[in-house]
Length: 421
Image (cartoon, rainbow, N blue to C red; front, side):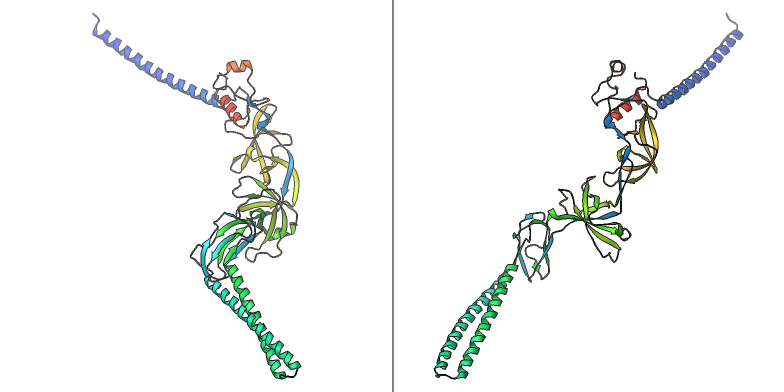
């Protein structure tokens, strides 16, 4: 049997060993965790060994292009031919035959007004004209009889003169009656409002049953083929504008489509409130917008300079700073650049510093690109990887040749699997 002192000593040694082992285990776990974190960080920051596959379609070559300069013009698209049809009578609207947006031909009936009282006036004027014609005929016969009798001395000169006066008065009454009849017919025509030219009803102002006063708006008709840009220009820029200069502008509702036009007329009077001058621009495009009132903004090209240009899609913005991904000597680098004015025709930006003529940049960069990554050019987006690379790469992570979207795919693959395993 062991003595009690030896038993207690053995237990003490065992407890001491366990406590040391626990501390060593915790320290080992912490060391392993730190090492794993450091390796993860170094792996994230490491440049992928697998190259980024890029085609020519993914690149933009920086080169000199024309940058137009000139004053900015803002305004709206308006038709040159437009008619605001108003009522010429005080009567009731019986019928409106056309709605907003409907096409019309010249002479088409648009609005019919009540013509009851006007028809009565016309009938009365026509009857008065017939009565005046009969009176004139009788007075003319009477005058001719007295004239014959006077030649034979059987009547007096006074009677002849009285007959001539009655004849003349009857003639005047007939003329007045015919004028009233013609006026009544014109009033009848005014009860039918017709289209003055081929176009579209842009706005209907009345409905059946409304009372149309003289001067009240009924309908508006526009010719959509006669659209033009009616813009406003700052007065201090008007001396630089001349008739015939090219204008490039965008129209709200037509996205990034750029329209071209020519300065047709410059107003000689500035607006009394805004001190801006109106400029009329005729469309040079074969198919101008067919909707009036759309907001438009552009630039009158008073000058043009040659400078380096970069597409807006190739730019990366970070506050006031701008960057581009340049490919040089087979290496991808993120380059800080300084941009200037934007060309209103194409939307490209002027490059003031950071890139030189002939540099190649990614046309549509994505967030997965890595600074310093190797780049490999491939012929087409359908090109396949070499057999060795295809064998080493996983089927789901193998890089594919780029075209805007495949740059993202290849870069994501290179970042997620830097060793190609």
